[in-house]
Amino acid sequence: MSSVDLLEQEPELYQPREPIHPKSIKGRFRRFKTTIMMLAYAIFFLLPWLRWARPVGPDQAVLFDIPGRRFYIFDLVIHPQDIFLLGGFLILAAWLLFFVTGLVGRAFCGYFCFQTLWTDLFMKVEYWVQGDRNKRLKLGRQPWNLEKIGKKGLTLLIWTAIAFWTGFTFTAYWADTPQLFVSFFTMHAVSAAYITTGILTATTLVAAGFAREQICIYMCPYARFQAVMFDKETLLVSYDAQRGEGSSGRKPLQKGLMALEERHAAGTGDCIDCNLCVQVCPTGIDIRDGLQLACISCGLCIDACDEIMTKRGWPDGLIRYASELEIETGTKPSLLKFRTIGYGVGTLLVSALMIYGVLSIKPADFSVRQVRQPLFVLMSDGSIQNNYELKINNKEQTPLDLKLEVEGVKNAEVSISGGFKDLHIPADGTRNYHVHVRVPGSSGVSRQVIIFKLIDEQGKFPPIQQETSFNYK
Image 1 (tube, rainbow, N blue to C red):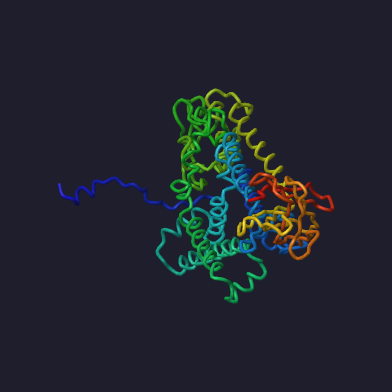
Image 2: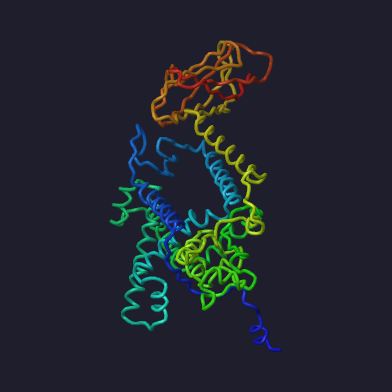
């Protein structure tokens, strides 16, 4: 057998993509998706432009200032020393995701995921420009002419504009937005701004405009491990096969099978095989085939099925949010189960720790470094002197007046180069001081622990302290 024959027999590792053209639908889940989408866009696109007055620092409500090493989130200013909050936020997001998934499956994917939100908007652009599903299918089959070029070109142009503004908005979170806007379009912005915006423009355009459901199926890791987070009581978008199939399967409307009573008498299920649930699905699956990797639990198939059932005057809920236990036995799921309680407790615990972490951020911190050249100085009167470098960071938006004390060595005399008595630290500022600590004679030991303590003279926060060593020889 030739190598060519072997290559021809190799199975395909990647299924070619078939374009999906979802049909528009109305219903409660569609309204909920649209509401979430509008809210998410309002927050994402408008937040960088929101001004926020501060005594010190930029007047932008949310700004991640990398050069200044500050994260500004309204009245919260996060310094490098408080970066542990980022770890806490990521843990909280993970626990919250596990909690929601244990309750309602991949609801996050269907309503809150960035890929879903932007894909939804891009699909709406297709609908506005090219028409609903049938018109888009017809447009795709027809040869390239002025109509097809015009509609496809206008769609791509709007997509690109949305993708570009998405990239620029993300960049705006890392710079003063009004200044960035002017410098960006006058070609005076830094190269990082153009690179970041360009990369995000391209990735948004590809992910939301062309890849779409391929991201959910092949690239999203959440789709791979979601099933292990479900149990028989997890609410999922489910097709009631017992009701829909009956004893002889689903059949379309036809003579003798028009009324619900006729269908039940013939053993036929309530599903009329209209395929509307498939046509509205953004990932192109048939929910009647059961739980699938590509299902994002958006609920649009529920709206489609309920619309048909309502028009026929039949009970809705043939496709609904239901647990496997409910579909099999009719038993309603219990929310008070070990997994749900565990995820809920974990989420509340991490939330409480995050709140505590934010509220307990110290208004100031400092570091002490002993000057080791020389390690100690023997003074003419027989006393021993050690020198220290003191660095104080004021994380408040107001100045601090601090008093320095030392503990751990007896009869210590403290002096600060420059003749400072008290330490004045400007708002959101840093000061360095050269401190001399002198003690009389020798204590008989080579080294002792010494404690530097900073006391707020206004009493706004308790003393903060650092340990170091005092060397006699």
